[in-house]
Image 1: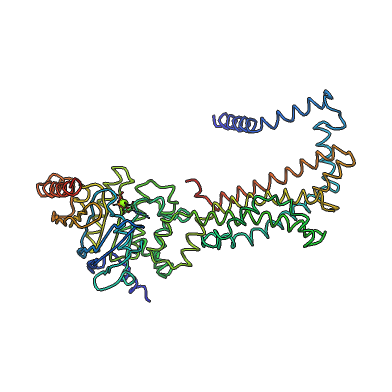
Image 2: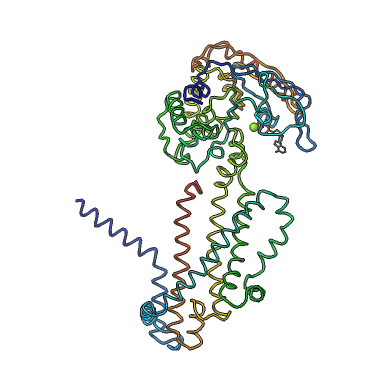
Length: 261
Length: 267
Ligand SMILES: Nc1ncnc2c1ncn2[C@@H]1O[C@H](COP(=O)(O)OP(=O)(O)OP(=O)(O)O)[C@@H](O)[C@H]1O
Ligand SMILES: [Mg+2]
């Protein structure tokens, strides 16, 4: 009886796993079909099997080094953005006057693609690794502090009043109430920021004299016409972005358990 | 501070009668709109006063001004001989969802005022146990507020408001977001607590029957510019029950309040 139950539960699990990945399977099938029938020049579009084999083989060669370098740069930029963005966001958010006096500047830089500022950062930081990290950190910092400031400004007043009538001093209201009220928006900012640092780092690795990293790897593969390697590297980068996002979602769910409830 | 003295200090069962509240010459405006002008009011100490009045006449504003949650332009507000700063007050908001801290478990919400007051962990725990006994509640306090029903959440807010054993308790339409059953339960719980303690309670209600049922005094306000229309006494014995609702005295008082209310609204 229980065995039947557990096997049917397993079946259900399999089915739901299948259902949630049906899009992926269709894409893979399409890719496979097109490559198999050679609708596109096989030099331009290798089959998925070949690509995955290349990915597997590269995993045991130099791919991990590039992978972790890119990850390291992205996280480095992200940490700078978070450490400098959260306090600035709190200060701007809790002083509306300061915020409004900077509003144009904030909106302007938020609308300027960070990549447009590569040359500026190259001049400031030189052509070494740190200029890439600096650009990414700058772009992510804007996102972080903007979201934090927005979160602080839109905190519900009732809870602050509740803490005030309880007799909590200002610092307590800040750490016990405002901080938590802002947390959901802060996490949105952080999650957007980590995605953005990855984007900027990859682009920087592609175009600012880099000798390593996934960006450089992808562009190298393209230029030497090693398309299997190019697709494999793109997939690896995608896995990195996806995993970062998932990790953040899990952290967010733990820390902001009350969100949407 | 020893445990013994703090317990006395924070116990809501202490037989100290809550202070009377005196409002003198209160002026409060929103922008150009004058809401209260040279407003005087006396609220009886140790009793329950229910505020009833037309929509938007400034009931919440009055409560917030007295409780120090909203600024006012001029006037003097005293609790007995003391100022607000020297008085311990509790406040129960209409919207418990927005008033409780969802990042804290129910028990930590209740403990929060005690933590702010600087009580040790043990003292906090003892006080919470006291409150649980006082309300004889079976709510699982280790849940988060959003895991509780509306009535349970409002009960937590009330326990939080009473945690430090305030001398004055403010409630702004505490039942209006609750269903009927929860309203009845919490009303009766509150009555029990009030009977044990003698705090000064000021409650806004939009339901005249409820206002009279709970009150020792019903404060009727006019339309804007807001003045006191009348203060009506209601002396029925406590605990009041469903039977109270059909007593002659109750029906008479309610009718009288309604008359004054209509007179003020349609004037
Ligand atoms: N923050 C504010 N800014 C401007 N006007 C306000 C503000 N708060 C209240 N008012 C105005 O003051 C008046 C009184 O508001 P208040 O909320 O005190 O009324 P109330 O008697 O509690 O109403 P209700 O019966 O709806 O609860 C209303 O006309 C309202 O428009
Ligand atoms: Mg109101």
